[in-house]
Amino acid sequence: MSKKQIYNPQSSEIVKNRKIIGGDPTGIFELNDLKYQWAYNLYKVMLQNTWFPEEVQLNGDARDYQEKLTQEERSGFDRALSQLIFMDSIQANNLNDNINPYITAPELNMCVIRQAFEEVLHSHSYQVMLESFSKNPKEIYNLWRTNEQLKAKNDKIAGIYMELAENPTDKNIIKSFFANVILEGIYFYSGFLYIYMLARKGKMLGSAIMIRLIQRDEVTHLSLYTSMIRENMRENAEIFTDDFKEEIREMFREAVNLEISWGEYINSGLPSNLLRSYIEYLADSRLLKLDLNPLYARFKNPIEWVDEFSKINETKANFFESQSTAYVKGGLSFDEQDDNNLWDD
Ligand SMILES: [Fe+2]
Ligand SMILES: [Fe+2]
Image (cartoon, rainbow, N blue to C red; front, side, top):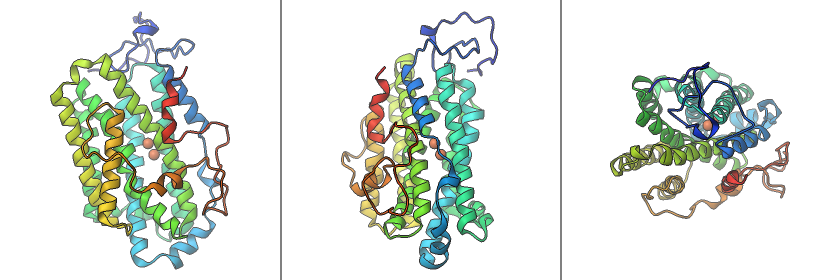
């Protein structure tokens, strides 16, 4: 598979023949006529979600970090944050340098480019968070050099993307779409959960608000890759053999094991069976949306408060009383439950 040409006057591809991968685009972003209306809808949702890290109040977090967190909580927080920093870092480069060059429909390029911007914004938000509470941000940025658990998780995540970089085939780019679903939909969640658990105890509330804004973005990213995979199930049906689907389910199984051991390591204080069932539930719900057989038969979120906690657009009072949680500037909400609306023209 070769990268698309950025200017391709020889192409005579018409809109209805656009393909997500393997198309022959002219290079013109002709958007009045679309093949993938859902992608354009998703792009607009992403725009409506625009936010800026400096707008989140982090005043209390410096005091909490120094005075309220126990030693154990502080190191759990540092580890969780360091892992989130890695994932947003690799995503920005991966999307720009590795994935977008092979995406051949302009309405999809718009989404991937916007996504890359959001990953950069998330890196920016970690810088703002670190500046607010840490006397030594370098320590957290460099944790992967000394912490083997962290390095192992990062290596695993990077591995699938490196496979695409080294051997760009149709199958490997589709595998990288699944890797995106796993990153956006599983690998973030022990870290998010840890920070929400602290906020539930009244600690690091500004950081939790930042994480909710990040999570809202990640949910749209999850939706993007789920939808791209579903389109590819039609456009490149021959790749989705039973063996390939099993390979993908195995990827999910490995990711679940890795995420559970990471979650246990950073130790949010949750009983480990609850953490396990939560991560398994996340994996099953992602698989179901991809029309793949679930692995664990976990169909109900065992930690229901997380859903309530992570919603941005709630106007009812909750424990983040000091800050407005109805943050969104436009009128458009997008929680995970709503992603079916994308397909309404
Ligand atoms: Fe991100
Ligand atoms: Fe993301």
